Length: 184
Picture (spheres, rainbow, N blue to C red):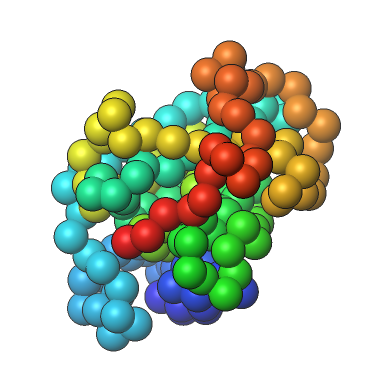
């Protein structure tokens, strides 16, 4: 695996190195030893799968407040997505900066997202599925988010939005009274 730290400290774009032959391919997408070589947390407690249908559909931007903040390792297994993270760590030099990368089943690349980041994605194909490992359990009381179109962040989505959930549309816009970042 090839680990490249993104412009947001602690977040890594990871490229797998598949072995291919006449039967197909084999690749590793998690190796505790390799992740620990980069100081990355590897205590995952759950694996989730999400299917999204419709070109341009958006999910996000989601995160959990401490003490339920979580690390995520995201991989696209069907189709492709534009995966986006926002740094919500209050004392970070890149607070409210975002990073986006195309993840696809074809390239088999991944995104490692540390605690303190909002996460979401846009589908780049009619059918896309992701799997992701998380380091903490879901807590409804600690869920939070940033709107996909918040002017404080200015995410540049590659496609026009086609679908988004009512729940994600209900996330309030950032202002000094309703969001001050999180402290880990």
